[in-house]
Image (tube, protein in one colour):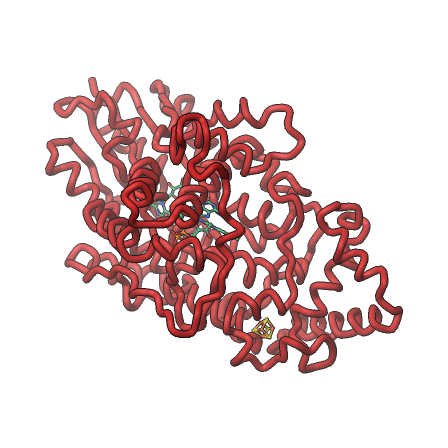
Length: 512
Ligand code: FAD
Ligand code: DLZ
Ligand code: SF4
């Protein structure tokens, strides 16, 4: 008599719900590298290498701690290729009479798991994932009956509930949000520190060789792999962030600099999302840094808002709205992903840089994802399915629960305003203000029309014009729509002409 406890690739936490009450003598743990999970989208090579290495290290940790573990490697000759196949195999081998799981991060996996009890005729218990700070039930209670689900109000509730950055029942500094202080461009004489990097040991090197051999047709570069792959290493990344970067995190959160992919961001999403770090410890460290005088309030609050606010909020929203959320397309966008999303071959320097860095690092910081790549996807009217799939593939921190609300809700406004009060649409002048990309661009950011004009300039107005019916009454778009309405017919026609030329070139696979 024994219980099987499956641990998924993004469940690498010793505090995992399904590990609680585990009997070291009779229960069996299962970790499996399977084709189904590694290929349901063609994940970035570095994402697979990172996760397989982290899984192998975590497996070794579990065995060292005395757990009985079956670890199935990708190239094991009997590998069944899917999670169910491996669960079924172990059930037969070990006389299993119960299966304990932790709630997965993706809806498709939950649906699959819910069928196992019936298929295997063994009780299956799916436990809540209590590594998150808001349970799904708590989010649903907060969200029920609200027309708009604004992160800011959810975040305030979380601050109060967890008593993070609070003075009694008031927010520290008497304000909940210091975002207005967080919009500086990076001064020329400042350069962010190098990200924390780790050498590959033999486990990681084996995995890199395996990925090179089996996933050569997947997106992205495998060389210069330097991610943390153990909890100890992830803690070093966190410590170095708190010591070296947090102080500037707030001020330069929205800044972009050519050749600086990492900026003052924390680079911990990979580790939070696969379980090597917990959100609680991360928030506590940031709060301590503020309380000890090592980081200003705008930095600590800005960072804590991302983890306690946005991260918890998007997860709640995903599960609250799935499966319908997968189908939303409020703006009825139909465009196909341009080829340059895969090979970065575009004359638009901002997009070229961000996509090239994405391919190299399986990482881009938030404002690159949102205001460069996301902004383009929105203005160009790309179909949510294609954009969602791309974001799920290319970033090593991507799982549907976090990727989809950011894509469908935040960048594409495909949920019609559930997440965002207005689309994050911007012309070239915003990009020029927040980055130095425009200086080395083929296009001229100050030029509004003609072949040399920055495409973001005319696409921005064309987007508003095209979507006037759906967005024209949005109170937060009053200003730009007034400007659009006051344009001469000739100006509008020029915008339409330039946009059509641009879209035609995209359609013909010409380099734009
Ligand atoms: P920092 O800037 O240092 O932020 C600290 C932490 O806050 C992050 O590690 C992350 O855990 C959390 N966080 C910040 N912003 C968000 C957000 N909008 N949603 C959820 N958590 C947030 N994040 C992912 O973890 N996985 C994704 O697949 C993902 N896809 C995204 C797609 C788009 C279109 C956009 C606009 C954002 C996406 N994000 C995603 C959110 C954010 O860009 C990344 O979390 C962040 O860039 C990770 O880098 P970092 O750890 O250096 O973050
Ligand atoms: C992303 C990923 C990859 C690439 N490979 C595996 C794997 O082989 N085995 C596994 O258990 N999990 C993997 N994962 C993570 C899963 O896709 C993730 O657990 C689900 O998407 C649910 O969030
Ligand atoms: Fe991007 Fe336009 Fe600037 Fe070129 S000019 S980098 S396309 S915003």
